[in-house]
Length: 348
Ligand SMILES: Nc1ncnc2c1ncn2[C@@H]1O[C@H](COP(=O)(O)OP(=O)(O)OP(=O)(O)O)[C@@H](O)[C@H]1O
Image 1 (cartoon, rainbow, N blue to C red):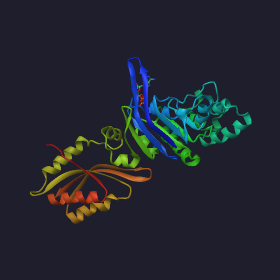
Image 2 (image 1 turned 90 degrees about the vertical axis):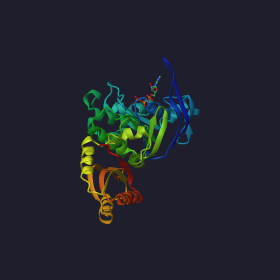
Image 3 (image 1 turned 135 degrees about the vertical axis):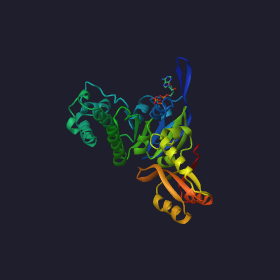
Image 4 (image 1 turned 180 degrees about the horizontal axis):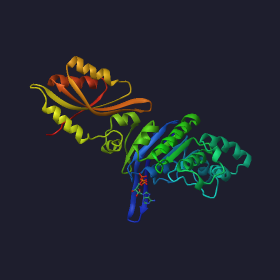
């Protein structure tokens, strides 16, 4: 569906050239919701704007739906762009036009008749939940409603791809959730491939199937959202998921571990374990096996169980105490069961 090969983007900045994208290769399959995440300046906006050639890359090729956009110019490029809708962080609505007229703008520009436009726009305003506000002006509606207009306008040309450039960054958490639900619905019901850029893992977690993590103009990590959450490799990825799954334990938990360690019986060992798992494995039977079969004491000190793409995803901090050999056996057993295990040393 979307194929980017060897994309380099160099801007001429006031202090000389800035290499915003450094050889990015990316394939996005039809029907995916694909998230691109990174800190400010990582190159996300540059990358998403390359997909519809709002930015023409300095080097590399962009192919969307079988057509190499980087070969096209003028009218051919404008035609190809109609298959790619885009929504923006600040909505970009025209204040002098009503909700209906904003959504209809691309069709007016394409020369469609008023009757044809109505046939398209009325169901779209229903889809985004704004039929009752069709005659209002942007100043008379909320931020979330403005973004719904932006989505209706982006869908007016019946695109196959929808690009979202931080579409929820200006919205509160609840409105963010409802806009992401709408984008998911557009993806499912209309079969539109969605590519969204964000600096928030929460957004990726709620909506994306796969995610690419960007840093300094490159994709440094990519995979299914559940895999990236349970097995982050790069420091940047770990720090981005920290807002959802804290990588560092709170001081109170570490203090509790020291207390438990101080109370170990002679000959007993203790070990703090960080466990994470996704999908099929159920924690409780696994933990009770450790207690029953290996005679370990387990104190669950911290953690959460959540859901990503309808799969359970959990993260726990557990202090295991018992015979040293049994703690080793427990770690092996957990790993065989598919649980990610990290041992954590807590200083005095
Ligand atoms: N038009 C431009 N001229 C010069 N440099 C630019 C231009 N646009 C972006 N840059 C630079 O390119 C790099 C990547 O910017 P980009 O906007 O793509 O990153 P981003 O990840 O989207 O960040 P943000 O979330 O802050 O928008 C940054 O160093 C930025 O300063």
